[in-house]
Amino acid sequence: QVQLVESGGGLVQPGGSLRLSCATSGISGIIFRLYRMAWYRQAPGKQRELVALITNEGTTKSADSVKGRFTISRDNAKNTVYLQMSSLKPEDTAVYYCNAQLGSLEYWGQGIQVTVSS
Image (cartoon, rainbow, N blue to C red):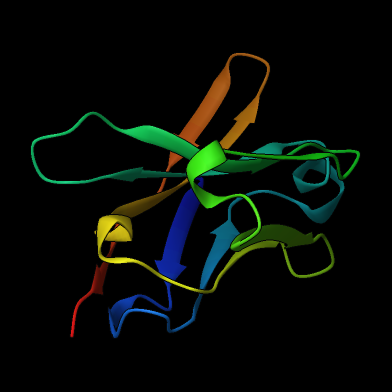
């Protein structure tokens, strides 16, 4: 059974930083490195949106709203993907979801709350 577990969320002041982690289980290390990993977020009353993704080759892509502030990375040895968030703004407040995709296979984490507020 594949599971994605997010951690590292919480309350932070504007301008602050957080690092989200997504640990996967049920996927062997050899297979994990083939997955495209991504972070999505959903704010209250809004649709879920892509924040950043990283391919199996390490290519990254970020939403315009977070470019220069958020960085996605992966550690294939630990079956984990990270989202380093800096210069956080109140509009970054949302539930953040980890996503793993390989062909027709797709898995989601349960989501973790990030609140940016003074």
